[in-house]
Length: 314
Picture 1 (cartoon, rainbow, N blue to C red):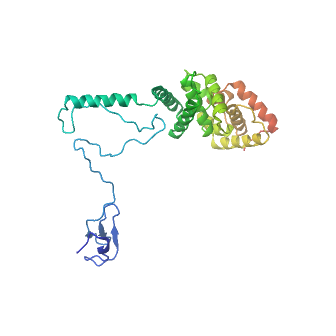
Picture 2 (cartoon, rainbow, N blue to C red):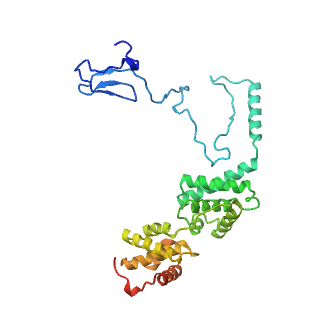
Picture 3 (tube, rainbow, N blue to C red):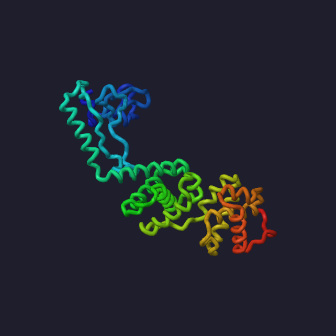
């Protein structure tokens, strides 16, 4: 067939069975008959990636590097000059060339804008990795936390303060901004070196100087987390969310610890649905004391005007 490689000469009828039902493989450009399977066109335009590798001894066929990331000082676009003793063919380089490469290596190492800033960001990234591992933070949240830390570093808020404390505060601010249910108790438990009081102080410092706007913590985002640890039914979770909505409308959640309010609402919901869960179980799952759950429970019951004797199964 003349010019079968061109799109204009693409066959329309199978010469074997006369069927016009032809199938084209978009990956290889092969044209075949759907009825008898006869291949009409074997060579077409291959629109797949080209995996040619210039270095024959290498097994990797990737021709791109790692994606840019805010986790690195230069976003991962740095240049590294290794010690070179031989050329591409394996021949030993002369002494003059080796000395020239070493001078270039030293010049590249000393040409960084601010070596202290590089070390600072590297240490902050290491601390953030610890928080991400212990608290199961997503990559998007880590990028947000590092962006906040970079702003704090540029504003001079890190000078004279602990890098770990400011990084913990930035991670906590990122959790609050993205609606991730992580409280200060979990930050202290995940990285005991930094106390939650220190993280709270750094968090207030960031809010004041960087003009960061974070939404008010909604107690509802903690209900599912506490319920999953206790193992209550889904109808109990829905009832707890309903109680929190009513409480928020009446202003009962303003100025209260959202974790304690969520724990109290879940305990009240367990009472209504007759789930055999104690205050101790709820408090342990939420990371608060039984006194907190008891006080918040009493406050919600007064606001919602619910009498324990009138609680009934839904």
